[in-house]
Image (cartoon, rainbow, N blue to C red; front, side, top):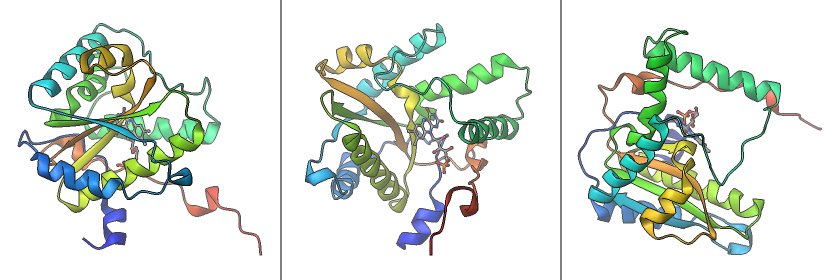
Length: 220
Ligand SMILES: Cc1cc2nc3c(=O)[nH]c(=O)nc-3n(C[C@H](O)[C@H](O)[C@H](O)COP(=O)(O)O)c2cc1C
């Protein structure tokens, strides 16, 4: 796939076929992702790839906690209040996703169902977890973001889909315990990975973008 066509056509996938992703293909994606730039080439990313029984176990741990309403204990904090422009884009995103699924504003059970789909990886057979050492700074979070985008684009180029998910970081102690990961690693992000299911209703949703004039200032 041509690079700019790939950049423009990638979208989050929230409905996957159960078809397994061969490990060789995941290796190929990671080979591309490791070409990402990083601060003084520190390459701070650490990656866990789960499929089969381990993917199922992780899903059960996360789903049970989320379904029981246990609040997020993510290692990564969210701002107490988003700036207004960001907040309104998030609200629009949520409202439009609910509309795609024909979920009414006051249908809290259906809204909760959509939330919980995160912890079932939207049906994806493979899950990628991204970690950073606790001592690292914002520069490394930046690097991990670049790595993640490269991974998502590489997957798209090979006919796979991804959904980047903060939700998968909500219960990091349980994930560390399951995978034997040390306390000094922060769980930064999870990704569902698999073959997109074109029949999944959520996959018809397309997010919007602010126009350049909203966020670019030109100086001549
Ligand atoms: C750091 C980060 C966390 C995200 N967390 C979630 C998540 O928990 N669940 C989800 O469905 N999508 C999640 N997304 C996907 C965003 O909602 C999505 O990227 C955004 O709406 C733009 O849509 P697009 O990816 O289809 O272009 C996340 C994206 C990023 C970059």
